[in-house]
Image (cartoon, rainbow, N blue to C red; front, side, top):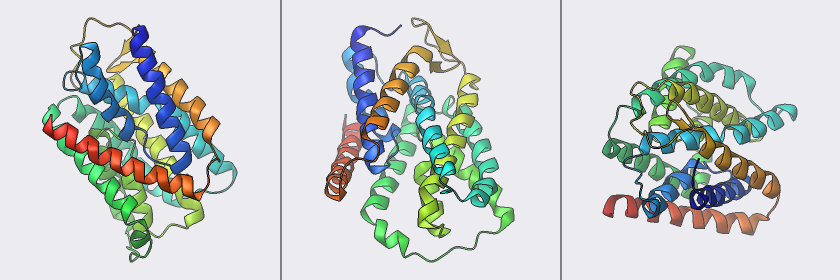
Length: 267
């Protein structure tokens, strides 16, 4: 069981990610993983040592929120079901493969993958209007599976649920704006659940022995604490905030990501 101090940290991270995700629809792992990198050394741990466990626990902890958002969009008919069905098999397979690869790669490789995803996120948020004006890419049915594999695998080895790359896919595919968010939530659900399966049966077993409560690479107590806190604050902040609040939060999030990158590589 985590210590009281670790529980407080997980509650704080969950509250932060839940609130911000509800307001500006960002990927919660992009906050949770840098936060763990900064604060784990206080408890005598490091993300270098606990990379697989930290990523696996974070990705699985946020599944209920992704699922809730997706079901809510489904009820409102705000999901492009055909597009979701087309790419989900590849994304799900990629999620499992990504979880397996994450148990084999080094922390330096993970840093490169995570940093690349952060840069993509920053560019996407800064040039969102330009992306909406991009040309439509005609994606042939035969390429749906490999594209899904790339999105799922790349996302999980980058410590992510897949929403960032799925967002790019939706923009280039010119999905109806009203259906885009719900479809991305669907992709996040498939990626995260597939990654969960891969994390429960990792290619390389975790070497952590001083802690109990593991299911493969996932630390169940930490996952529950983080997930409950995240989901509770997501519900509290959902459908709140005006346009100015969201713009300020978006700018703050971009600054946080930039500072996290600097800290990750300079430390």
